[in-house]
Amino acid sequence: DQQVKQNSPSLSVQEGRISILNCDYTNSMFDYFLWYKKYPAEGPTFLISISSIKDKNEDGRFTVFLNKSAKHLSLHIVPSQPGDSAVYFCAASESGGYQKVTFGIGTKLQVIP
Amino acid sequence: AAGVIQSPRHLIKEKRETATLKCYPIPRHDTVYWYQQGPGQDPQFLISFYEKMQSDKGSIPDRFSAQQFSDYHSELNMSSLELGDSALYFCASSRLRDREAGELFFGEGSRLTVL
Image (cartoon, rainbow over all chains, first blue to last red; front, side, top):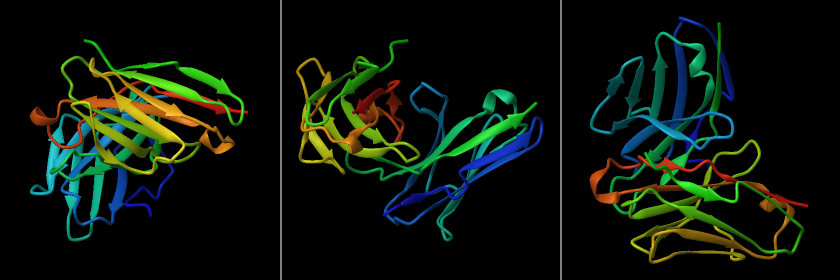
């Protein structure tokens, strides 16, 4: 039962253009959403998050959009850089309790110079 | 800054053997999480500990057990290993009370190969 779904296993984008990574979730109890970035041979690192009370959160080149009614979120990277090439995991959490994080399968982003 | 330390980084075992993975969280972090990521799969939550007590349990097989010790390090014990246990095992830590939900700090992972 995949509660967090990333339907695009990979994405290629030209350097300088926008990268858009999409994610859908099914669990209505999730109220906190995150994106993690993972390079080969490293653990995932936290990138950006958004609370369910917001619909947009921006941090430099990274913006996350949340559409609660559609249970959909997206990560926009503008402009994309070759160093952004990595696997991006969408994740979700419930703010109460011990806050375990549920991950999607990841999208491999390749930014072409 | 100190990060989450996992050992060993790589481990090769035979079927039916036992393996132990260790995790040393970031100092002053009170919560430890274990995740399993099989080839081409999403990281699956196994188990977590808060202040040395089990706080949550996910899809952890009965053959696996874990604990958190007084120094906050955690160990994941896996017995009667099966081929399907071959995966990357991540440990993550956080300080529950002063973080936003879900901001975990991950180690580099321990890759277990079962032959």
